[in-house]
Length: 280
Image 1 (cartoon, rainbow, N blue to C red):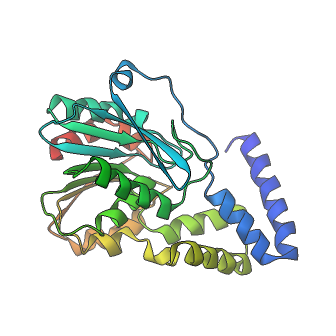
Image 2: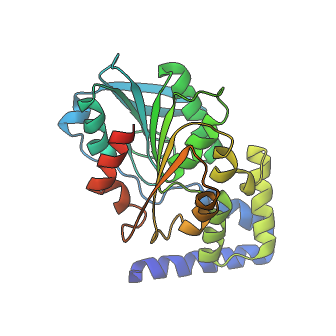
Image 3: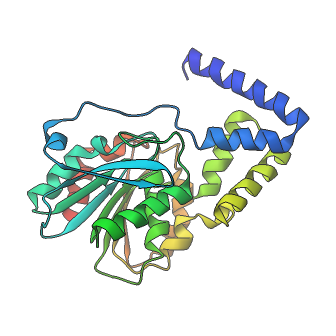
């Protein structure tokens, strides 16, 4: 960890410790706001591939969502769903591969990401956006999702009627929401009273506890072909959360496990790109 990061984290920890001493509820509210706020926004110059796309845009809950569509009317429709602090432009190699197959491709930036508006992103909002995209531009036959995008996508797909024609590729998905929250609280050294108030906020805003937002819970009920790509050295979405699902050996879930690629290099890996493009 770089020195400036250590100083920043130390400052944030001190600020939250002081706030928690006065009010666990106020500390939880501040923590929730921080939790939902990306600390960096990926905005890259548009490459020729993206400038050639059809720009798409809609508004939801006061936030402008911007995206792209290529090859409208292609033989199959596939959507790319990016993760936290990422953007659609990071997935250009996949988009090119899908276009080579003659597919129509959709890619949208989440709130507070890429070219979309907003300052915060929550899981329920991401799910709501995926639902809106489906109804506006679908139906969609194939999906590629990374990290937070995978968590949101699975929870959207479980709301659809059973459709075994859908194919889903997950790359290092945020497997358990509870793990993400646990990591956040461990980093900031926040205590149990703040955690209880934090979980109460999630329950009030989403109607469910963090434990409900679990890919293993949702995907076990979805009989669609899934390719799940995960790295043993992923420290963001740890393999231990995936292992119980691997052990159950569901026939509709195929696992591709890698070594040494971590959480972000994995979706840029040439062999992973080839495997996912072929699967979808």
